[in-house]
Length: 117
Length: 411
Image (cartoon, rainbow over all chains, first blue to last red; front, side, top):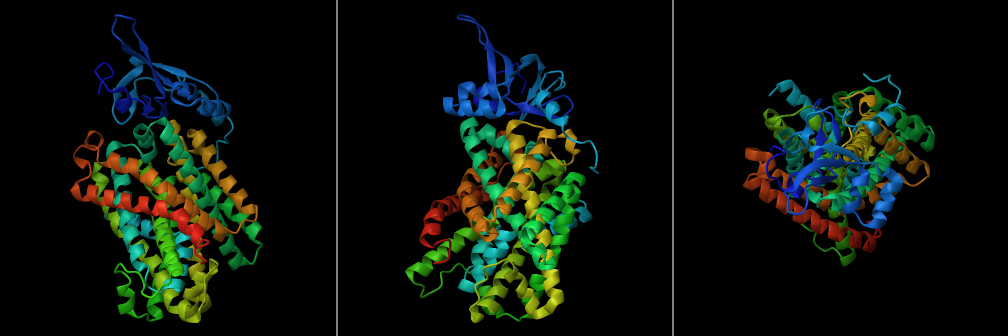
């Protein structure tokens, strides 16, 4: 399915995993952003990724807890970067370039790079 | 289909099937009710075959493991509830497995329980760090085949085969008091939970992704689940039957893990005892790794992190930190001094409560033609899946009342 076609947001896009052009998992579609205005067509503008994007979907107390544990970072992935939507969302860009590798990189810095076969 | 890979896959499934809860509950069930609970093992085994096959098929066709798609299906709120519940269930199970490893190392070496827990956990963590997925799966699965000695021991003690075969027929023993009936029901629920632990489906489907399964691997998936799990379950049944044959007449209540190993020591002496303990050590070690990795898989997949042991630890950093943390917390739980046998009870109880939440999305996904196309559940798979879903839901509803009414099966 192409992102430019018609799609059911909840059943066909929300909460699907994102995979970048190199085949790496790089997040989940946590929310979406629209553009448009009154009297104009509403179009999908971007995918929102990160715990901050749960805000509209979780009760306040749960969101407080999520912010405490995971922060409130949101990364915006423009819809032009979406290649296709299947059982996952295939991106046509690299996760690092799209800003989706920040947390992985922070943790990676702590992990010794030796010992594994 | 590569015959060598298929054989290795089946052997791994056989060796990796039994874990601490099956060892404990099979021995206890045999000593309390003779052969009367064998049919529950058989029914639950068909259940894990059905759901195991589905989880492998979803991984091979949709190319996504269970937890990735679970969130999409259940939504964020219910998905988070399911995630939390399964993390807790798997963590308790992992702690119980580490406790089991420590007990067996204690039997083998005489070292203190706490020291053995630390040594065992560190050795397992080191192997998880060093070895890639396939090696982890194969080494612990294949060394777990030492457990076959339980089946050989059963043959050696010449059980009444007719009565044993009769145990496969669904039954409730005659003449039980109300209290005994409740204990029988509690054991039935516990066995269903122990055989169908949710981590098994998470680990199996994630393993399918790790090994890059595709539709061409579906026959291997089906054969591994049916033959591998089926033969693995026979080992649990052998433990139950030996217990019925040896412990019931002697009025022995196998309260500790080592009691199961005595079933082999009686016909084969000290050598048999050591082989049985080695089999138990590797089977339980494998299960400890699987539960811990199942948690890291679930967490990573739910939040879309890089994951997998086909990658170097630093290539999937948050996944690596997750399994290391879960293993450490499980070890700390054991180091508090809690009785591992008590943890087994809690693990079984908590897992059955989570089971319906775990298997419902899998059932929906495996039957969804938009994901699975021609590989979606057929009528047999769908009917079996729903029958088992109703069964585990009933078991989940009954689990807590039965636990309290029977004081955890003690009566």
